[in-house]
Length: 169
Ligand code: S3P
Image (cartoon, rainbow, N blue to C red):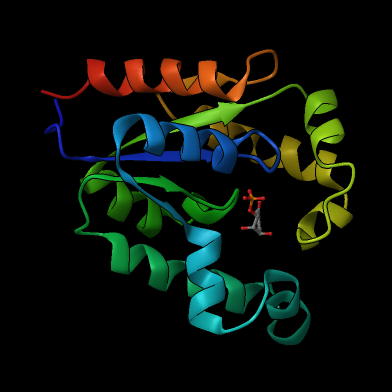
C-alpha cells in the first residue's frame, strides 16, 4: 500500500490522453497538476521541437531526467509524463518511489485521429506506428492499465482515481 499523499503518475504513448485526463484527475482530487513536458520546456527555455532540432533527442532525455530527479521527493501531485520519460529505468524508479503509475493506452486509430493535427511532437512525424510497437512491452509492463479509447476524459479520470484509491491507505 502507498500512503494517501503519494503522487498519481500517468504514462502511455502519445495521444493516449495523459495531459487531458491528468488535468481532470487533478481537478477532482484538488491537487496540483504537473506535466513533465512543461517542466522540460521551462528548464530548457525553449519548446520541445526546438530542443529536438537544436540539441537532439539525447539532450531532451537529459532534461527529462533532471525533471524526474526534481520530482523524486514530491507528494500530492498528479504528474503526466511524456510518452518516453519512464523508458529510462532511473526515471521510473524515482517517480515510483512516491507514486502510483497508471499506463494509458488507446487503439492506434484513436491515437491517429487525436494527433492528426499535432505540431509539437517531433517523434510523431517519424514512423509512430513502429515506435508504438517497439515500446509496447514497456507500456504493458505496468500493473495499472487504463484503456481510454472509448471513454470521455471525465470518466477515465474517475476510473483512474478508483485505481489509485484502491492502492492507497
Ligand atoms: C515523446 C512524447 C511527448 C514528448 C516528446 C517525446 C515520446 O510527450 O515528451 O515529444 O518519446 O513519446 P506526449 O506523450 O505528452 O506527447
